Length: 428
Image 1 (cartoon, rainbow, N blue to C red):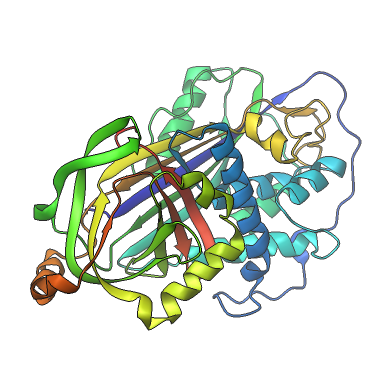
Image 2 (cartoon, rainbow, N blue to C red):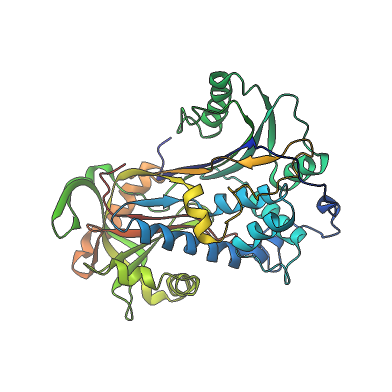
């Protein structure tokens, strides 16, 4: 099946034995026995909506840090999957380590109980997993555990109950065999998009946490392959590259040129409860637009582009066809967002197992994005093209031939699934 978008993510966090004694045991309340009632669906007051503000804040803080450190590079990641993986890891953290993880994710623990956070993620993940014929979002976790190591029942039960994680017993002394087991699972869950992920695993590793998200969707208004042509893309003042540019003539889209900011914003819908915002700064104005990329600004654009009919316009659209990936060593990024204990000797993961003192040795994230023309049956493309071809004189023209931002957004859960910046679409 041809896809309009085809995205996935992996966050891998191996935990290895460190020197020293295990942390003293801590008694914790049983999260899985919470009395909260959960109703699947996105209705007002649903558990998942309570965690949306924190998830959005975390997503944009992470983006701003990546953009500051690599202003001239492509950026692409799944903030939701990173948040979910860290929240899951917090189930095995204790004392200040656990508090720091949850606060680093943006949660105010004086206003929201820890059980509500995990219930929110469970509701969110289950709501997203309600696939249709034209939309599939598959998010999951797996624990690869060294043979002979006993997980605490509470950690095992909570990770399965809230995050539906799978557990695989692994022989890390056979480094190649362990890597192959992980790679086979990852390849299966991402439908072959990521291969050979794990390599050079330390024999001291006792636990690897893998979190992934796989997303495929069909455009509500697809592009015609016959209209894709090579065109110039202006990376910066001195760099021009040739890219296959997809084209549409005369489709109606939700589109605005912001009267207060130097940018245009396009809403592209999928068949399903997901849409993409493409944000095109005026030439040379990327930094100015990034500075005001806030939750409030995203809400403002989204509201304008779904409630005001004035912005539903006939458009001549040009959008690059491309693929790119983002790979990030989170151990270098997370401490700058307040996660200072996570990869340090002070980290307390005694909620995972009492028999060993665990240390996180590595944490990284990988996401892949592919954009192409096909969004639904080819007949729909022909029909749309014929219907609007005669009205070219009234078209607004929107040409994504310079760096732009992209936000993939679940309207059902009000969550940012993916976030990125396309600086050079020829760089994978």
